[in-house]
View 1 (tube, rainbow, N blue to C red):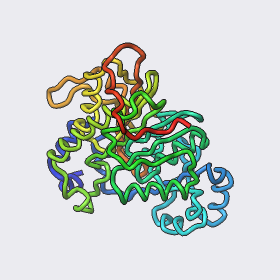
View 2: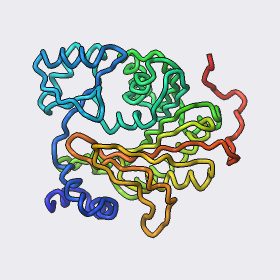
View 3: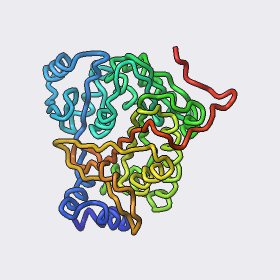
Length: 335
């Protein structure tokens, strides 16, 4: 633990000690120094799980199905590159994705025929899984402001056979004002400090980390979440997630929404079979909403990335209202 601790930013480790339960801390720190086990998911828009698993196993790939996700399997790291050279990969029948990201979509429970917003969509892994869970029926608005990431998003969706998603190159912070109370489900995988992706053997993975970076991310995340909530229909559900550990990017972002919108309510989450801890209700002397205990933080191991997940619903009672649609604003077609 000492070697790993000294290979990571000292202040980052200090903060982890305040976030992670003591009994879990050594294992979490160890995860930063262990090679990640790659995970694939079968894209059922292109093929069946049984057919694809059988094909890959016939080709010699040692798949280990994940019990939490019937369409996903892990395999040893040395098999990752050969996997990307298969026809299954080239044809979009499989997609490499961390299972923590898959669980974010699973927790949102998108339904066929719904209108769904993916507010931070690139590179398209979660967008395509949304479409898969919806059976390519309904509508998905996939938002990405950065040009090269936007075109990568579009290319991935095309390769994966997604027909219900339309890409919008725009700032997600403006969406709620432009199309208030439009969507049945909203996914916000917010840009963050990416703390769960730090590697103890790779100084560049955390070279730019600083608490100033956390504060900068938090400011943007609060505006993105507010926009997402404004775009959510009454009775709809919103899933907020990041791959950061920092409460400033997670619980405190959601707490700010709860304070501003009394009609926002947290739906408690549980993930059987996955190492996790409940959301924090206090951080650095500040008391946060008690309902944040219903959020959860997936604790990292060799398979799962560290991930914060919080499911929010919009009550039908009177609360703060979204702003009016601006004249000339781009809107999503209803038909």
